[in-house]
Length: 211
Image (tube, rainbow, N blue to C red; front, side, top):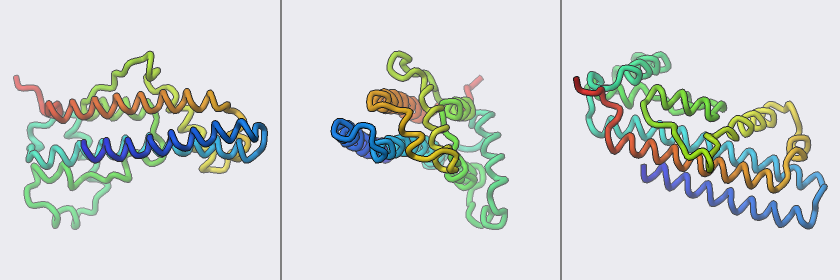
């Protein structure tokens, strides 16, 4: 998880720097359209953090299981099911040519990172991934609100991406205090989810429980 956490920390630092700029800029230019546009960009940065963190962490699960040479046969049932589902996204000929040990290589070779998120990551999606892979989605509610803010971030990101509303229209809905709250809850939630996945990998919780 070293790379996952490094990328996460780098993007959090970018967001914090950008937020500080917005806060200072707002004091001098409150009410101007450029200020609203800057606020909308902050939401895009937060969504970028969410999607990159989740997709990188799920990729790390596949890489870690593969690196440990864990056989498909001893994985949890739901994880087996998602691996088989992933095969539908792979070219059969290319998949067969890339595999030397099916029971081990299927964990990595069936995975397509681009299919994990696809522009629709929020706390519900993370809970669904948690259920499939078996890592905990429990976080400290007082700090994270269980990621509820991710629903708003995803919705506004999609509104901007699809042109439903302009950057000015979205940005005018938020004060700098609103953005700070969104930022803090998002970072706190993702920090705990990443820690949960690290614990899951360290303790190999992707394995079936021995009977």
